[in-house]
Length: 112
Length: 113
Image (cartoon, rainbow over all chains, first blue to last red; front, side, top):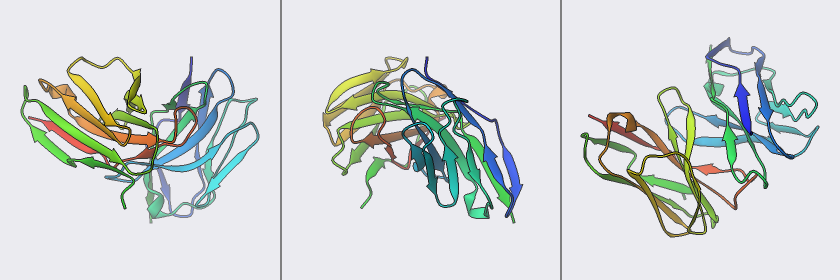
C-alpha cells in the first residue's frame, strides 16, 4: 500500500542549528512527494515538492531531494530560525493514487 | 482574499447535538477535501469530492455527512456529536485529484463538552 513514515518528534533546536527531518515512503507507481508546514493555529501550507526521482524541491531555505533508491524525501535546512517553529508533514501523492498520503507530522521548536 | 475559508473557526457544543461546518474555495478547483486532525496532530482524510461527486469516503461514522452543493463548496454535517469528535477539522482543495498540492483552510476547532 501507500504510506509515509516520518521521524517522531518533537525536535528541539537552537537558532542557526542544522535541521534534518527524515521521511521515507512506500508507494505504487511513481508518486510525487511534498512537504507541508503547519504554523500554530493555521492550516497546512505547501513548503516544497518534487515530482520525479532526483528532483530537489526548495523553498525558504528548506530543501528535500526525491531519492527513489532509498525511497526517501528528507527535509533539511542549514540554519533554522525561531520562526521555523511549526509542525512539518511529509506527503506522497500521484495521479494514480488519487489523493495525498500524509505522515504523522514532526513538531519542530527552535529556541533563540 | 482567502482562498479556502471555513466557518466557524471555533465550535463548542454539547454531546448529542448536531452541527455543521461550512467550507468555500475561490480558487476554481475541482476537488475538495475534509480532514480531521487529532490532538497529536495526526491528519486523517475523511472525504473527498471532485466536481460535486464523492470520490473518497474513508472509514468515517455515518454521523458525518458531507454535502457539496457546487464545486466551490463542501460542507460537513455531524449528527449526535460524541466526545471523540473533538478535533480540528480542515477543509482543503486542489485543482484536481492526485498529485496536485492542496490548499488548506485555517481549520475549525470543535470541542465537545
